[in-house]
Length: 222
Length: 263
Figure 1 (cartoon, rainbow over the protein chains, first blue to last red):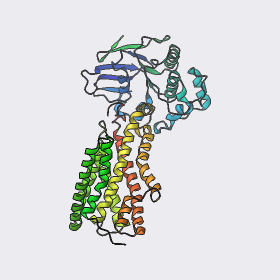
Figure 2 (figure 1 turned 30 degrees about the horizontal axis):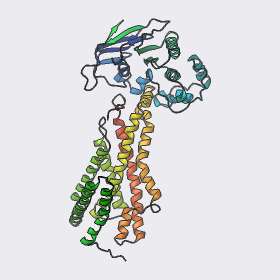
Figure 3 (figure 1 turned 135 degrees about the vertical axis):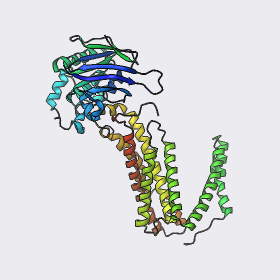
Figure 4 (figure 1 turned 90 degrees about the vertical axis):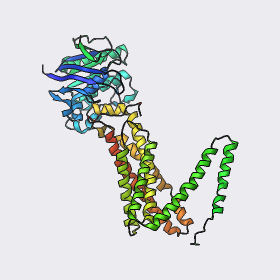
């Protein structure tokens, strides 16, 4: 499979920090791969994902997406192709349908066709949200349900890479299991390239991801 | 009735009676304001006397460059006052704010003196400086409110802004409400002033003209121009400044540079 994302000699430090978060960090991700990055809290797992989608700027090295530096893409175009789903989902103060569809109002997504209600309802069922209607207030949902809505919202834009930041850390066991099942399905059935960071030791049950440990500013393959 | 009643120095000092009341109240109720009231009183006398002599000198001299120089000093002082009110360290906003303030104040004051009032020369200090002062004073407060609101909302809504960015929004789309709310917050006081003028309060400039013996019907015309001018200059300054400063809140990758906790 072709390499989709490459991180070469990445260096990054926070202002006034004693040691760098990343130093000479390398990673190569092939299309359709499921990569899990593990590491203790505070080692920079979330920062790594944020640097890949340019939510933060790095200082050294380079990050390539489809053999081009990420800086050569317009930020909005890059972020439509590499979607980062944050640990704490953020919902706008309206119903589920509008939360799912608001990205279609952005200029960069102008060529995409908004899915119909029937398609959205079908997706809700696939995401174990069959009890939720499209007119439900999104902020009244549990964190687990919001997390799945956030995943759905990202998938509607058909990204090439999904960056998942601790998608199950704030969830109870049942919700976490549902999210894992969805993510595995996305990788196996839809061929989505997924990079997930987690500090949990839990593993997907049906696939064998490529696992890395983030330690001492570098990634080590497990 | 058109003759101004002069206030002698003795009469001026009679005004200190009001300060005496404030001092006694502060003393009796242990408000701890006696020192501030004293300093404030001395400064009021000193600063206004100084300004009176300076204005007399400037009006007599009628020099274009001196008038413009004073206008620049007023605009620079205003931008420092705005900086004092908006405690923001992560995004540099001083230069664009100053440039916007200076240009919009100048354009507004120029428009009013040359076209609306129609005085010649347009920089006649007796008109240009007081009008410029009013524009600067009002827009400065509006800008400080707008900037403070922008930075506060961008921090509070960082999660939402980043979610939008992650779903393909550009920085303008990601922060559209924060922009709108900031500009609105800055403009509301001058719009409210238009609603209440003549009903709830008599504006200071109009009162001053009437006390100085001017015809009230002339005084209101000036006041109407001033009110319209203030809304225009406030809109111009707030919108342009907030547009520029909002852009500065994002980096080259359109990443939000403001962190939630650090100011």
